[in-house]
Length: 186
Ligand code: GDP
Ligand code: MG
Image 1 (tube, rainbow, N blue to C red):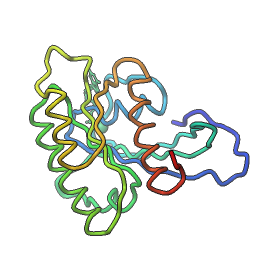
Image 2 (image 1 turned 90 degrees about the vertical axis):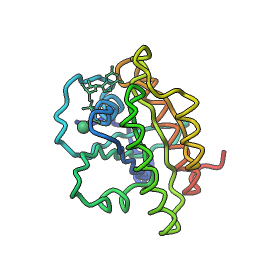
Image 3 (image 1 turned 60 degrees about the vertical axis):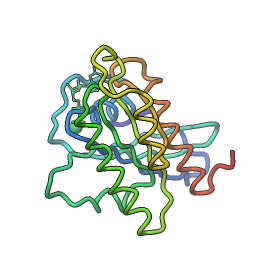
Image 4 (image 1 turned 135 degrees about the vertical axis):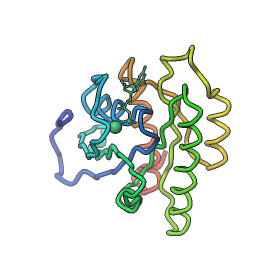
């Protein structure tokens, strides 16, 4: 699977790595596939963990975005993504309290790792499935409060509707990665 390819003016466009974390079923794969291909895939093998690449041109800057769609088993080593990622997306489903509790655990372990390694990589808490508003269990305020507690970005989105809902989340975190790396000054 590959995204839109753009020509490279100088051949050294920056690479940014983004990892998606969260309980099984929250929509990590759906969000990844939507961002990469603009399509919503209803059924995606939950056991697949893979990394996808998309070439982007944001505000006239070309870059290469690598997205790791995780399948996190109890015994898998978190260092595989902790070391790799420039930015973290911790996903929950707004329809699942259990996935929200799991998101807190991910926020705790990611922020702990970043602190211990003196890293300042951006972290975003992402409430997915807002198309299922009538089944909402986690209010926007509650999500925002958790994000503030961990000084992370906060988004609500859906992989099932317009591409822009998903693109906004990825672009939001890409902007923060650029700022953190000194590649963007506004
Ligand atoms: P993952 O285990 O986190 O990778 O979750 P998946 O991407 O496999 O999605 C799990 C299930 O939720 C699938 O049936 C998806 O079709 C569904 N799903 C994912 N995102 C959304 C969304 O934004 N809205 C709705 N309605 N369903 C979604
Ligand atoms: Mg998956």
